[in-house]
Amino acid sequence: MRKYLFCEAGFVEKSQWLPNCWVNVTCPNQNDFDFLTKELNVPESFLKDIADADERPRTETEGNWLLSILRIPVFNKDQKTDIPYSTVPIGIITNNDIVVSVCYHHTELIPDFIEHTRRKNVAVRNKLDLIIRLIYSSAVWFLKYLKQINIDITAAEKELERSIRNEDLLRLMRLQKSLVYFNTSIRGNEMMVGKLKTIFQDTNFWDHELAEDVVIELKQAFSTVNIYSDILTGTMDAFASIISNNVNTIMKRMTSLSIVLMLPTLIASFYGMNVDIHLAEIPNAFVYIVIFSIILSALAFTIFKKIKWF
Image 1: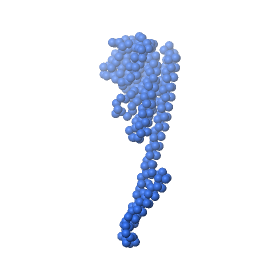
Image 2: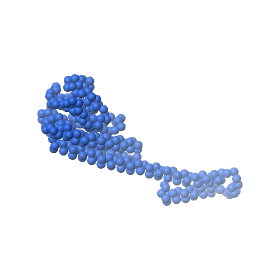
Image 3: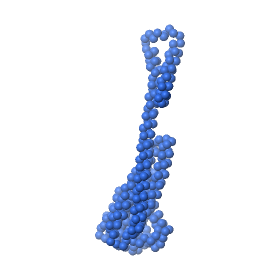
């Protein structure tokens, strides 16, 4: 699916391509490929690079074409996925009056960015301005998802306080994976700003104030990721210690219970032997043996209770 967006007071959708308009392609089909490669002459190798889900933020040139790949955050609504929050590549391909963005995944970032430009009447002056603003928008969405991750971590911790279950521990582990992806993607996007500054340093495209705001937002997102990651690591370590301690407590109780029950079993074994026990002629000998066994078990229980093994 592709849209033709022209910047007036924010981006306005057009019915066909115009010079200097932004062609936004999401989850491209064969028709979109044909339009990009045959009508706009976009290098096919660029489209293949963007399709790689593990592609890192970078820039590449081919003739007059410039490919800028960013990583943007996404929320995986499919509960079957291992990671609730991850990042995907988006490529911005530019050449003189052609600006194309291609993403092979549905994201909330692009529609929100377009709506933001309309609401705030943002004037995107050139192709570099679009790339920088998309990086800025990615930093904003990283922070939004980080807040949600923090809420999920708090909810999982409360569940674990009530009952330690494998599902809650796995939930924390998946959130920790999300933070690792966020960490690497934010650092990559920050490096991209420096690369773009080098590429466009001799042009009038570079907006120093906007670039500075983007770097500040990315640093804030990076700092937040590190804080949440440290908190989550500490939480996982704490619950691992709690689980180990609970196992030790259970084993102590089971051992104590085995010893308490072993005493009457031992006495019963002695008096169950086929030898003279010198009690055969005593009335109620069985009762005395049972009472003696109970006394020994009670004594053992009292001792273990005193040393807090029960």
